[in-house]
Image 1: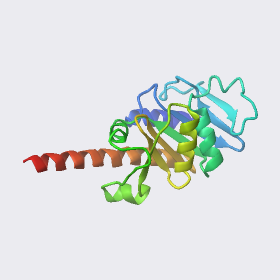
Image 2: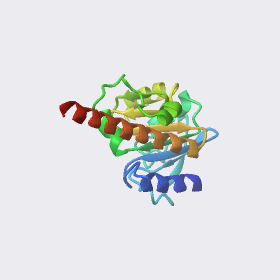
Image 3: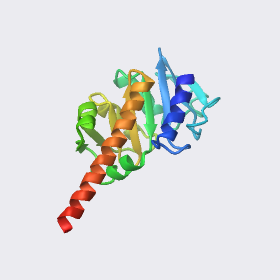
Image 4: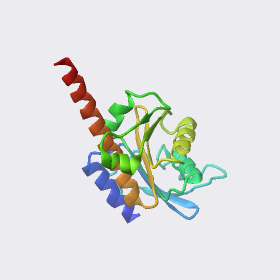
Length: 189
């Protein structure tokens, strides 16, 4: 739990989400620790609940868990993830609006390309079954994805690894945006 609290603060401090946007989770056996809906990522003390990864029926804690709880569940069931971080970083959201779902962003810089290879753009409403399906399918072969108009989901074997992926996706999007903007200006000169 303390690890999620620590990284919630890091996500906000790094500008990867505004305080009330985004969510974090960590798988522990057949359970997951997940932030509650509407909680501030930089103030998660007392705002993390434990829910089952596979639920037979809705639990009373599902009501207060993040609105993306079903997306986290699908990702845990479909991938080897042990941690998931979801942020709403500025460049990733902006870039996502320039791509169609199904497309992949190929990073411009060598570090992002090395870490991420390419970043799928997926579609789905907040907490929807469509998002759960699309995110979990895309994260089978990738560690980070961008949801069109919504933000980034990053998975890792640890919370730290998921944070590196979340940060890397935003960095790749920032570089892509700056390169594309500079190229467009250069062409008009």
